[in-house]
Length: 114
Image 1 (cartoon, rainbow, N blue to C red):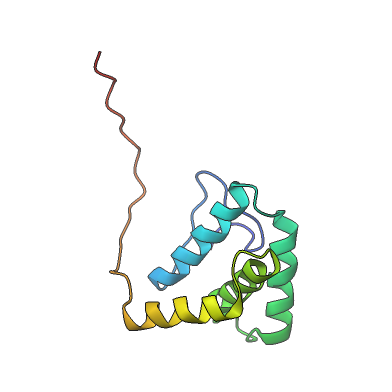
Image 2 (tube, rainbow, N blue to C red):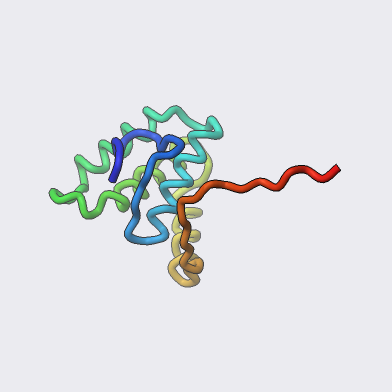
């Protein structure tokens, strides 16, 4: 992966994911930061703690740690509680969203019609 795992994604920066949920949690955490819901350092500290406390030596569970840190952040900021997160998790396990694909390409915008 390009760049520092513990830094917010920058425009033009490339990330790779093994599963769609990894991209979704990555995007959600970055969107929450971009919307000003928390300081990046707050998430970074939680992620560092998750990796140090529960992370595998080879890093294969990096996005599991990212998810755990995100859940802790959501609870700490009062956006949800453990019960709500457990319900959402169960719904997603029972009915996973369809797989998505994306490609990196220039964005084309149609000119305004007047």
